[in-house]
Length: 160
Image 1 (cartoon, one colour):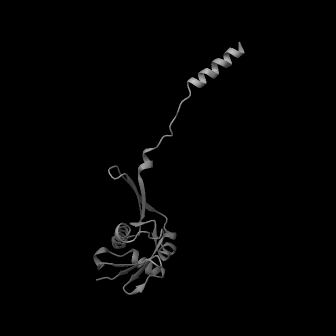
Image 2 (cartoon, rainbow, N blue to C red; image 1 turned 90 degrees about the vertical axis):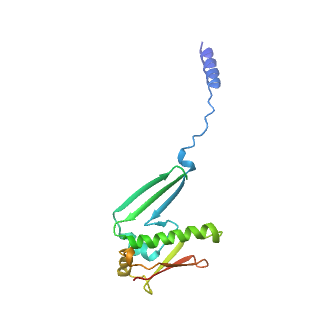
């Protein structure tokens, strides 16, 4: 009797064997982008990171999902960032995307930004806070220069 039960169990197991395909979630096909104050995560400024972002405690997080282009966009805005700083970072982002698409085949994965505000390089906490609190209406069009050998982007910002 035991042999019959074991034989029946083995036959059922072999007949009912499922050929399960690994499920591919819908998120697999979506490209994911993360922007911090309108900058892609591949671009950062060591000075801003150490003097400003290390002290930020509260952020506003926005999740945007575009089904037509199949992408997720995570956007993090710091509370003290004003529209001028966000505008400058948006110009940097657009310049970076333009360089990726048409001019450079292989840009380094991590680029460093150097901000030059009214002909002086941003180095101190006071300079960083002045940059972050900039208003868009006070900014002339920022000039962006990329140095591919040093993997740096230099942004020249002048005010009216």
